[in-house]
Length: 273
Ligand code: KMH
Ligand code: ZN
Image 1: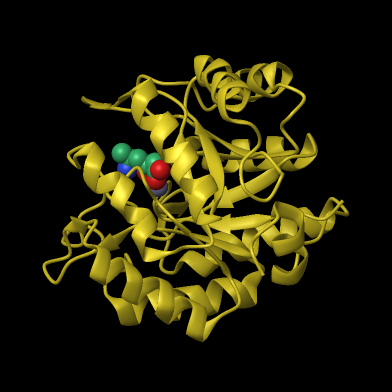
Image 2: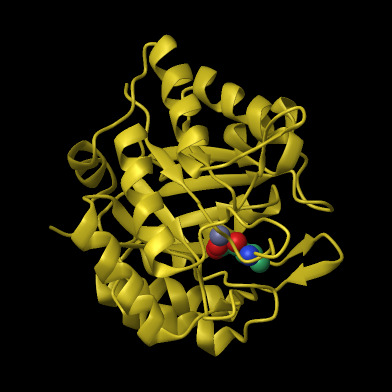
């Protein structure tokens, strides 16, 4: 089985002033998308920034980003509906107006460092059904083991998502949430319901590399990127997201699970043609 590599290049948490190499402008995002596709990514998980490099869910800017990445690459474009912890729920639902191929859907509220990332059941249900109606393939973000149970509740209530597959991503190592350890990840994988067709994992900060290696060894897929980790190795900051993608592609290839092409990934996830 080949490996789906997703890149999450920007996120909503790092400040451009602290991390100048973070891609925040449209031009930087497009260049990043190109280099990451060339390095082996098949999907991009996008958060965007405004002219002052602040996180935004402006639908016009989101649409421009989706269009520009589609124009420049064949990557599956996944928009974050998580936004930042400060974004109101109604703005997070409007993300689907930008017509992405895929959207993130976090399966429950979670500790998020000093903050709380809010995902009440009513919001998740509304987003789930909206994604079905708009023919957008969701990726279910699991920050906690209880999120697996919340995912089952959504599937039981509303049926399968658009595309007919159920792809989940374990986001581990967020301070206060599921730890970024092989044991925690394997506990989550063991709990997955039968409807889940594929899983990937990412680790925040120093958990990035061990979680990548664990996921690849255990038959999972990989998410990497500066949203989750800005350190390539001890004393060496990531200069370009493609460095993280290239490392994941090398590891996956050594493990006889080379990167999925974008065409394969589209079929694998049931992305609308
Ligand atoms: N920025 C976090 C509060 C997602 O993209 O869906 C939420 C997050 C999850 O990153
Ligand atoms: Zn995100």
